[in-house]
Amino acid sequence: MMPQLIKGYYQDVLIDTQGQARWDSGWHSNLIVQRCNLLLAALMKRHEGMQGILYCAVGEGEDDWDSSRPIPLLTNSRLTSELARQALTQDQITYLDNAGQPTESPANHLEITVDLLGEDIVTNGSQPLREFGLFGGNAAVEPNSGFMINHVIHPRIDLTSGLTLTRKLRLIFAAGAIPRMGGWSGWGRDHAITL
Image 1 (cartoon, rainbow, N blue to C red):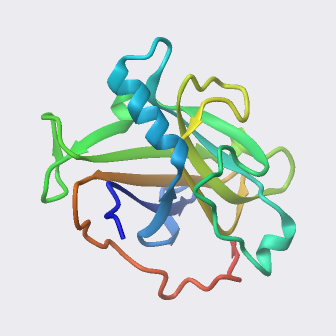
Image 2: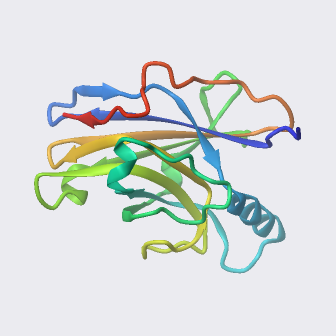
Image 3: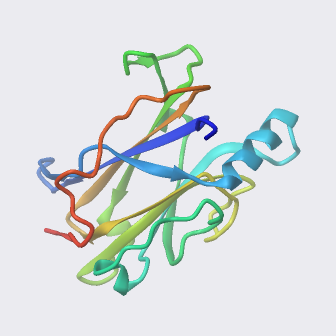
């Protein structure tokens, strides 16, 4: 089997209005989809109108995922049910050195930090979130636009207007073995997050 050249990980933390962490998912791996390779090729060629990571999009997914969550496919190119997306600035994307520390020098580890405010997403009561993805290339604010980089289908998180979902993602670009950052222990497939 050919070694993966890109590996992704993510961590979710729900923070209340007092700035206290109410829940932390720990680090989990996520799927880098095929469209990411097309985007990398376009960036190497300096294809007109293409850029790197531009948006983090979140989706509601489907209700039946609460009892039987599907596994994302390499061929996925959009979220199943996109709700919102947040534009990412260069300040939200950081190089990490081999020790996992921020560095100004180009490195093969990237960390993306996104704060999703419940008040920006929730219109009434709470909003279930079950999936997310990063988008680049020619992505715009419109749902389903651009090149999908990764796709995560996760246990339901019920976001309310008083909570902030802080999501960290790490992308590791390597030619060979990639270190494992965490598994699924303690996070059952049918477990929903409600606060």
